[in-house]
Picture 1 (cartoon, helix red, strand yellow):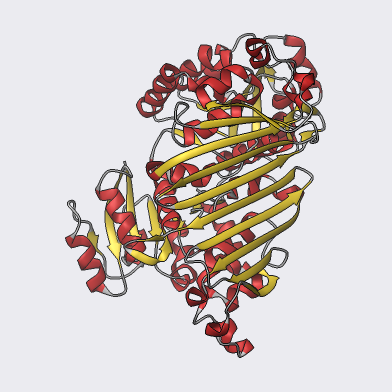
Picture 2: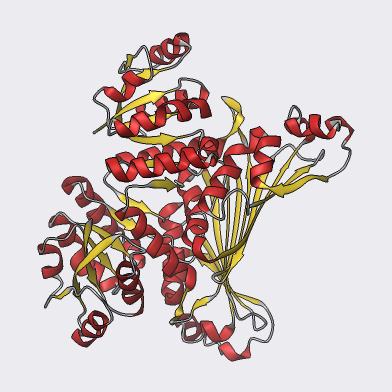
Length: 272
Length: 272
């Protein structure tokens, strides 16, 4: 049974830990870390089999674990991912936006080859990365259209730069259209979906993103349109927020747990 | 580098072998088998590094290979998959329809656990199995709508049982609506997509299939609609046939090659 170290004991880390605790993921959670120790303690209190709380992130991967699960922050990836691979542990990354920095991606990619370890990026709040990565070499265009209620977009850096009042939007409006690279800086809350799609397909400069504000919806919808020699793919996901963590889509949590399940089980693995 | 044995040297097996030969998949093709030896010989003639042609399928997995790739037939799976796993080799299966037989699925599932080996099922000609398997426990409904030109449906057992002339269809018509389990017996050419979706989601009795004959299209289109607590997923793939193998969608071949690439590389693995 694989031994897992958890880096980050917030809402997502907690759900992953509970999935291991319940046996849904057949693995052993042996070590946990959070820079706020009280979060690690609250998590451990909810688990039947108590993992060790370590005092710093290096102690996660220097211990006897097979896989480190990151559910912390982009900074955690930038600071610790390389040493996790160098310590010969596999790594599952939730903060995939960190990999849009090409130097971070390249260093980790090379380290995986050198140390014969793997990095896993769960699909997040979208569907269809299985097909997008398969047709990567033949892709001609990829567009992501994200539609949210203006309230769900409030606070994005975009509104500062445009001097636009989010509450003035009274009908369905395309408020941004541009490269994924620019979109993720202006709408940081959407970074994971845009980053995953960019990494799977054409990269963040050639992946187009439209952000639509729609006062008549209460759902977060992501639509992907891709075309090339293989044909056309159109994917739409209407996400419901997770009830224990409203900032995250239910699908993003379920896909992380499924990804971890697949890593940990000798089994029939469905899909590319 | 992983050592691969190939079971089946037809059109799909050949494309997979060529992808290994070109270095697109970083592996070594060491042994091949086809019940028609001339097919194995034709394939080997096209490869730079010549694999050994073995005289029977058991010699594939009793040799020193890490993974057997099946690109032969459902019968090949029923006859040989268990002994491949018992010989402690991983297995990638193209003829996934064989797993709709629950006794076959259960035996192979248990064997994977017992022998700590994995079976991989590439995504075939559809997208989004990554999300469907992630939300499996919360799925309420899954429907597959397959649209083809009547000419592409000709020869299906369905037309015999209904005493219907496929050429009499002059406008877009839903000709079948029922469980995947029934659909795969009536439309064997569609078995892979319906089987994969059933295995990833609600099983072949609860997965609904609609077959639409449309004289005005020349594309094979698969649409998946799924809903549950997590929200809604809608996926549409318009497939172009592969130019070297018109019976197979380009996407089905690309997803098999991508699946094999992922199995064989220590790398950054994108998607659940």
